[in-house]
Image 1 (cartoon, one colour):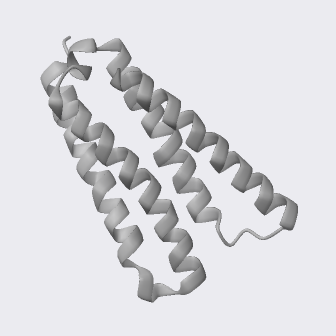
Image 2 (tube, helix red, strand yellow; image 1 turned 135 degrees about the horizontal axis):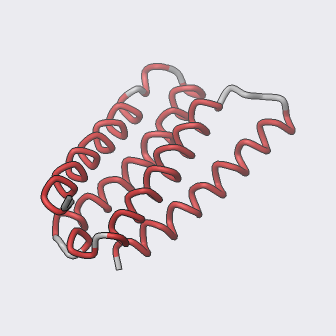
Length: 122
């Protein structure tokens, strides 16, 4: 079930983000804070909200578009913060990674908007 996949992955990502935040606090090195924030919000919170929607609206979860949206978002939600880490550690010449990740997340969000528009009933 797509909602279960999204919910499970989101909590794993949130735990990873929390551990990264704890590590930054322990070392007092907050250089990677932007990656930590994007990992938690895009990978954890937003993915969890998608999972809840698909759980509440099973007709939406049953569509092929939902499966594509899920896969895209998971890939983008991981690539985006990893790309931010690469840029912060290797320099701006590596900007292609967070750019690609952000565009993938945007595409997934647009697909989710289409799913919601088609399946949300008043």
